[in-house]
Length: 142
Image (tube, rainbow, N blue to C red; front, top):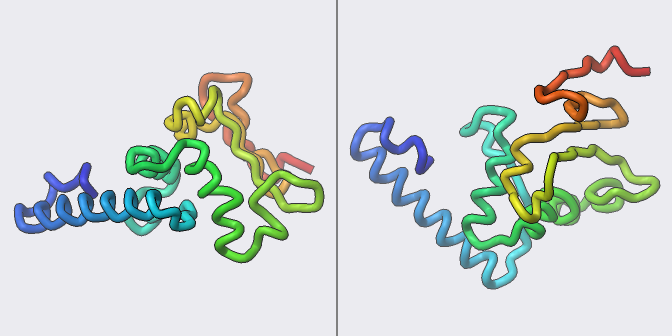
């Protein structure tokens, strides 16, 4: 919202900036007092595929990179009541895997550039051997 505020009429832009500032402040307070946080998308607001930008917003508002990653995995599963099936890489659990080049704890922006994506045992992206993403159709895998 903050990035796009200048595209709106002046009254809407002012409100967007004020709301963005309040959201950031509330998030900081929630982190400070230990409110459980789960990663979620604003898919109605952001284009699909840009969800990882949320990690930088979270860390810019007081959450550590490790805690932001946990918010998207085990914390989200716990808060949704499905941690018995998902949320951690453990035998017997369903697992979707996203791998990035580098260490996202050192640079959370690494999450914005996945090099490997597996969902339900099917590889959808494998850019480990290339500098560009290669989308692998579901039908190409047994």
